[in-house]
Image (cartoon, rainbow, N blue to C red; front, side):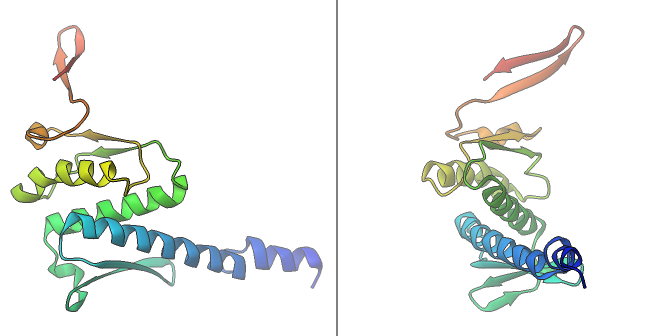
Amino acid sequence: VCTLERIRSNVYNRDGPVGISLRSWALSVISKKASDYASLFNIGISRIELAEKAREIAITCYGKTGEINMDSLSGGEKVAVALALRLGIAHLMGSSKLDFVILDEPTTHLDEERRKALVKIISEAFREGAGPLSQMLIITHDSEIFEDSEVDAVFRFTMTADGSKVTRE
């Protein structure tokens, strides 16, 4: 086999040793950071583990008593796990240099208690330096999540006959 073909199969092939090693490393980094975020969210999940299975990524959550069945998680807990994973991915992709993340309707499927706590959890986590982001933009119709919060600014967008009107609250 020629040298070029060996390079192609080892370095550039999805299933070559370089590709497999890079994915394994990335999944490990994301798992670690997602676990850190999940613990901040106080949802009873102490560890999130990602593992490559054939052509998919398996997500396994662990709590005090061991592995947690993903089907047993509430909608809000699943959203919190998804948010923790997204923040773990942001950490990896940005190498702690990512400036911001936009969350579009992050309160969907959250129960009332989690909806009220979401902004507080996020702002406290990032104020303490646990997150890789300097800014987070939250787009929502659920304006009450900002009540009694310490966010820097809230902007309301309203449709008028002349177009969108933006006001700072």
